[in-house]
Length: 134
Image (cartoon, rainbow, N blue to C red; front, side, top):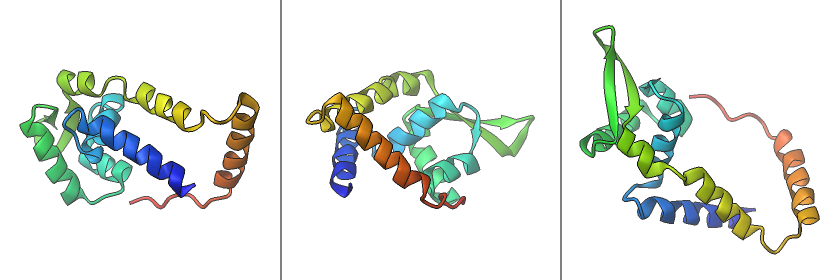
């Protein structure tokens, strides 16, 4: 399972590198494209990292014009984060690329074997403890 995860990670890393993004930047932009107006603490929870790390990540993305932080009701402490249209265009197709990569990894399996694998993995993951919230 680790080898499959590593192959997925490497494929995602390459996809992001082709766009001049780190994996963390790509994941954050993709998430923001689907969750516009998120708070910084929401991004920290999604990325399972600290608020300070998220702040640094967002500063870099702001400098590139890929995110905007907007105050809500004039309160600078409550800023919402938005992916810019340029960022949304940059990460468009990520989901399709990852599904294609998954298809490549599973290419040795016929449809019945894929269904069996999916069922077995679901059975295993259903028994795992939930990830802790930060």
